[in-house]
Length: 285
Image (cartoon, rainbow, N blue to C red; front, side, top):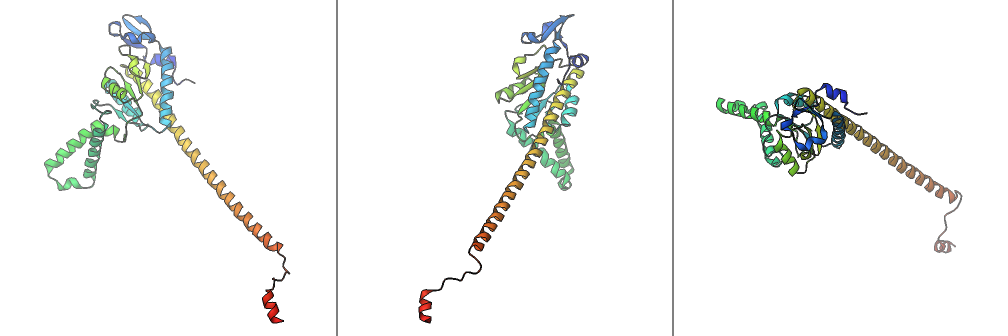
């Protein structure tokens, strides 16, 4: 069963594109018609592309890898932060920091510094510094929290990146392409769908359209995480069952060996005398 439907996309306003004069010719296969100078997106193709993207994201999440969401435009900030935070995935909703992917080591240093400042605040270190220094540290921590708080758990490069509006986030797209990181995106009629690996043709300006598509992707990722949990439990059960079976086999072998030894001793006969040493017998005589 498809995760999206034509009617739901229509109600969300996902079919509205940009003005004809702003269109990108590469989006021609996904444009259904033109009405009052505005391109209308073919939602039948949107359903197919959204399903492909959701399935791919589900598999990535099932493998235990991280997916980075990028949405710095005003309409998408709160939507992404709310829905993606719920599934424990990293996201960027403030200004994209240049080198976020290509210079990831430097970004990690900033995140570690943020953690150190948080620790200083909780362990009482701030009490031993001057008021001015305390104020400086607090401001720096707040700034780092705003920029990198949502990616604090991202200890390595993400395995995929989901973008809202690739025209606005062109630097993020370029960095991901340079590092061969799979890219997923909502692509409007003014953008080039060939710039990303999984393009979902839809309105990337309306909050209702963004919310609907992000919700579909978030649910797919949640399914992948749930499947991963089930897989781990199954593996644990199988491991325990295998261990129990091996233990039972070892016990059976030990018992079998004991019975074999007892049978060998019984076959010697209880009334048999031990053989007499001939030298001792001759001396006695």
